[in-house]
Amino acid sequence: MTNLINRLWLGILIYSIYSVYDSYATKEQRKNEIMQEISQLSTKIQKQRRQIKLIQEYQKDIEAKKNEIEEVAVQIENLQKRFPREVSDPENIKIIKELSDALKIRDLNITPEQDIVNGFYIVKRYKIVAEATYLQFLLLLERISENERILNVNGIHLKRLETKRKQRYQPLEVEAVVETYKYNPTHKENRGISEIETRLRNEAKQKGATRNKKRNKKKKKGKK
Image (cartoon, rainbow, N blue to C red; front, top):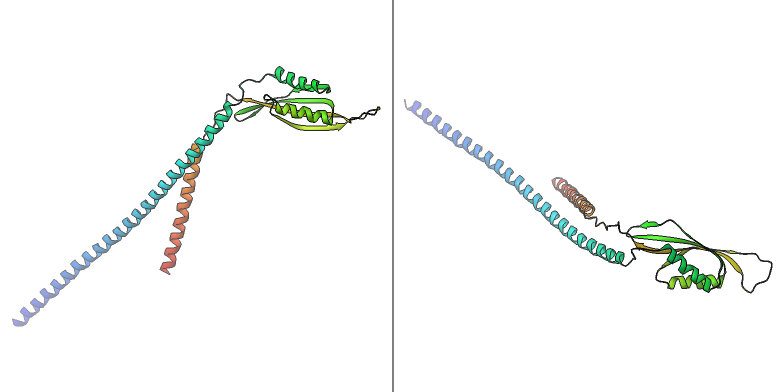
């Protein structure tokens, strides 16, 4: 009888110990699961913080770029307003002819060419062909450049003219393109904000991807 009681007590003790161990093992497993969940949540929080920081940096970059673009666009629009809205071909041709006549330039021919749209302004071009000495031509260019209506001369070509009689100054066949500019009413300066936002967003993604690659490399090295 005593042996039976001892065995029964030993069985109860073993069962109790097993129950306590099983309960401890279950709780320890749950604890590890919770710790793992906490670690995953911590990683997600850190990732979210990095993303928030990138977003904040991205927003600052966008605002800075917007201000720069707006400043440049306003400057362009102010410059655009300085151009005349209308340019008269007859008036410009008359100016060039009067300047040429004053310098006694001969065989003058002035031909209006096709307008060139260049963003916020339009270029009006006049092709000049005449017979003049080098000095006459230089004086003509100088006086054209002094005129407020006509702003530029380019496409200059000079060719010597052969003459039978001797002259003090060598006559030349001169050719040039005179340009004047006018306001382009159909042009609206594009700020390009959406393009800037897209580019900065892509740059932010690339930076984030590069940082993640570096972080993963460090983790792999740490495991080794």
